[in-house]
Length: 490
Image 1 (cartoon, rainbow, N blue to C red):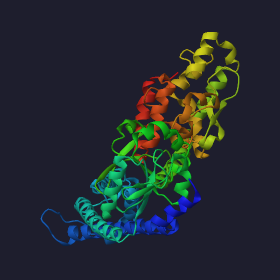
Image 2: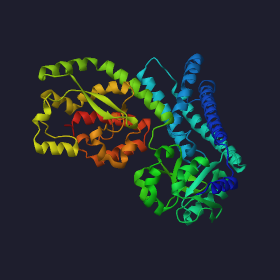
Image 3: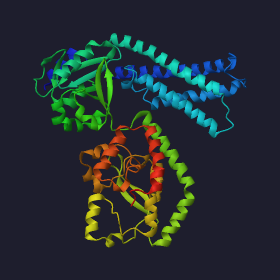
Image 4: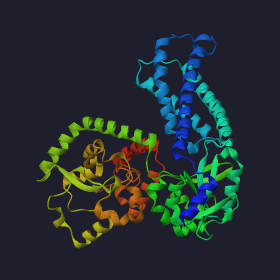
């Protein structure tokens, strides 16, 4: 594709300053956050007025405690905004289309109220009127949905005027691609600015309905950068089957783009997608393979705080284990295992030593072959008596809390990979090494050492693409019974 054709395309469709676009969308989310904070505050205050000043027969007399409720509301409002964020209520692609946004308001508010109720049971000194809790829940759900419905009308009006639009590049000038472009262009509320098409079959510059072919898949990265593309829609089934590797090579770029698949590409559901509606057109959003934003911050805080508390509480156990290891066999207490970290950076993962110092000499040729294939041995002669107990209960891995505290690992994540294992993961290496390995994970609660490499990839990719703090908490909760049963541990 020539430079002149890029210039022609840019002139035809208009090249906007991506910084101005970013500022507009940052301001949009900022206004939404501010509005939510005000509405939640108003809901809590109104609930207080209804509970203590209306004298409704359903309420019994109670202490008004205005100072206590003022402090409580001031503490809860930021928590509510955080809960909304964890439910995707500030992710642009989840907003202003369909009813999913309203469902998430209901779910987030319900979970927030449940947290407050649990807090009152855990701390008996905190006495909160049940009437206030119920009214707060009802008003927060109702008023927040009403506010967001009104805010959505404003956004639709601005989109119809050409503001807050999304620059979209469609891959595949197929009949489906053309239909999607026409529908999105006709539906002003969708906020879609169709910049053009990428196609390997039609000549560059060809007119396609309301757009034009700007280049081939080989021009993908350059076009995205030159034209400030924010979203790509893949609407060519044959292109997916033949050229997806090309797009995968641009993974870092894809992680700053929104990637959506046309509805005809159901054969790609296994790689983790979600239905997304834009302008009455159903599309499939490709889940990102990187944990970012509020999720990354929340995960970091949970990791650091959890690791610090864990190391303090487990210090006596560490001392007992250290003495047992030294009495059982000569050698070091800790073992350092060299593993791959984020971005292919290697680090030493700490474990309690569970093997004899001369363990490799105890292996038979058949055991060496099994070790090379699976990375584990079911009846490993290298493991000491104390080591068998430590492995069965996974106590041997607890020193990795130090790695979590150092930021090299996470409490929950994909299973760690050694350099020698890298070839087993093929094209998934890049994805698996975009997040920190975990002390536990889906692999821990789904079979542990009984899993082959294919199953490990499947579980770890599912975790990465569907990450949420709630998923982390669920995995931690399910790890405890898995360890007690000792299934798949050797």
